[in-house]
Image 1 (cartoon, rainbow, N blue to C red):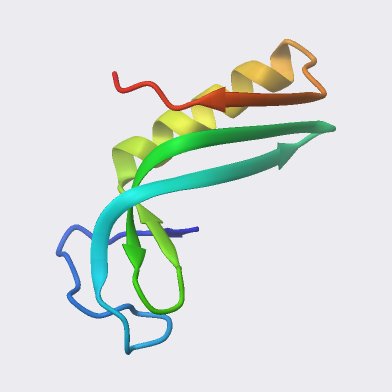
Image 2: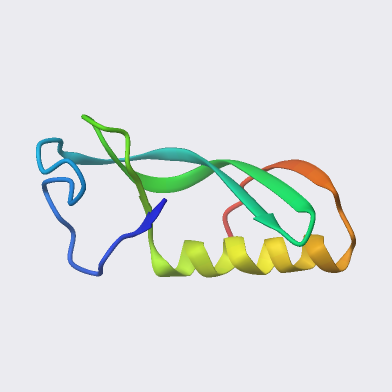
Length: 84
């Protein structure tokens, strides 16, 4: 999962072939023995290689959610992304 720059790219920065389209991603975060899977994350997705880009605000929310799960000593959790 890469971070999407503020200016939107028409072409994927990884494969340089595919077009970036709005979609959803499943993000897996692992930290300190915690595995957190979050489904339905809004993302820009390459239609060729599948590379997923999330914006800075979404990335911040995901990292805060992961930190909360670590503090709660969660081992494995699967969640659906909920818009703020």
